[in-house]
Image 1: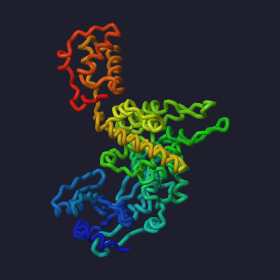
Image 2: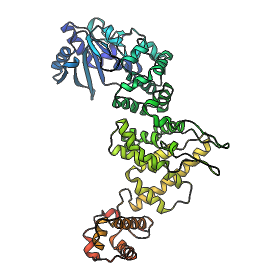
Image 3: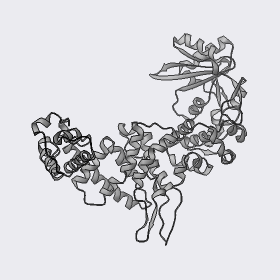
Length: 502
């Protein structure tokens, strides 16, 4: 098979071919770019292997392109960037090599090698294909392990004995499942059996690398497929035991509960395949999917059997939210606004569902708007995804109820502008009003004022809320020490929050 016509479309390949011939070295584009070329997938990362010095070839190409070449001599690699049809392309050059490994490390012992050596060290047949970049056989496919055939039959298979491939680099077990999940491929039986036998080897891989592969599985089109493979391979219990703990159904007196493991995977798929792909949610896509993965994570710890109602999981949302930072820390995920986003959605995921089952009051809607803030759209997406049932009509009924809740939330938000709500009565103002030091009493008064505003009892203005504050203080034996005029300079609530009213 020849890909010369396709390669000619990007002038960087012709340039590499010309410079390789002038240097008298063999050069090949290899790996993921070739795989994606066959699959018809977009790819902007080009890996070039040459029989000789990859750095020398990179420098020659860089001189013609007048672009900077980044060199990594200890790895024998170099990289440059170029532009084609308005897109940036990254080209990495490396000399062909062969690798050997110690049993306790993923770091290989590297030696110069042939193209055959280089292809032998590749993880899977679909990633071991090369295309010649020399004029004599430009565009010819070099496929010693049948990668093209495996693509056609949608199969992940190792080029060598899978026991050798996975022993050399155990992360390849995660990568096999990641590629299967991303491409909707099967894993060849002998290859999968080797993962099952060798799953304990994942322990020598850094948590960061494992999580990187896990995130790619989470972002795949149907992530449940990847997680089911991880489970059946025995890898999931080693890298994410909290998720495995969700699996199984317990029955007492004929009453069972749903399998929360498979429910969670269905919610994750629902999030991945939702209709709403707004820019804000797309930017938060990974973390929205993590919220789906963790929304019921504390159900095993809160599971109780009640003879009247059956199985309950009271408080799992609050306990789950408390677990989120620890899980993120273990996974080496960022402990920043992304973690807080997931934590918030886990904590609040039952709130919108409760609103569909009762008479909706403005007070309850206000509280949800205030607590969710700018993350309301993500929360509603999670809650819609959380409706899983084999009964189609039941699902549609719940979704119609969510439509009503969202319309009411939208109307209330338009009227009261609650996304960034702050009570006009701050702790600083309370301390000044009653001449109090920081104390529990100040916090209690803040809560009373906040609840009164959200219940629509008082407006969120200083003039409207101040008399209520004074009366609440009086009930506690406190005396106002400053006038309304004196306190007005301490009020820092933005104007848009001041018109919250009955």
